[in-house]
Amino acid sequence: MFSKTSDPTSAPPVSRPTAPGSNSARSVLGADLKITGEITSTGWVEVLGEIDGNITANGLIIGQEGRVKGSVNAHTVEVKGKFDGKVACESFTLRASSQVKADVTTAALVIESGAQIEGRFLKPKG
Image (cartoon, rainbow, N blue to C red; front, top):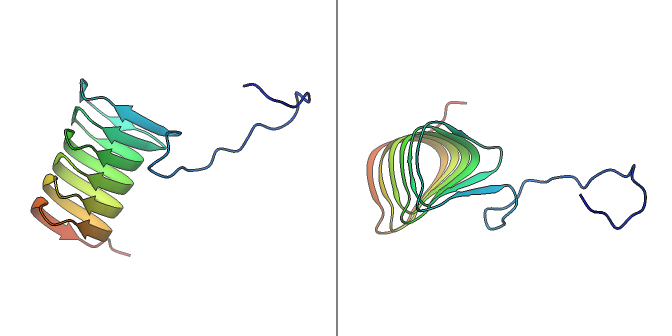
């Protein structure tokens, strides 16, 4: 939007995928939100509230107070709160505070001590 160069024809900076710790390309759904429906993002989605529906994103973080019920399709999923549904991802991480009832299809899995899980884990075909 603003530039230090005086050349108006110069190309804008290239957007690169960001790490989960950065703020750009990250949507935070606050603790006061309750959403029913589909959520689609090309970046990261952090859920602090309650979602009843399907989520498609590059990455998903369900915060400690967050709750998601539905299907998730993402590259990376990290659960600190509650999840009930189905997950298809490359990397799935369950933190100690997580409570999950799900069928999970993933290539990489991390489960911290204290995490509660009920469901099945499947390795993707390929």
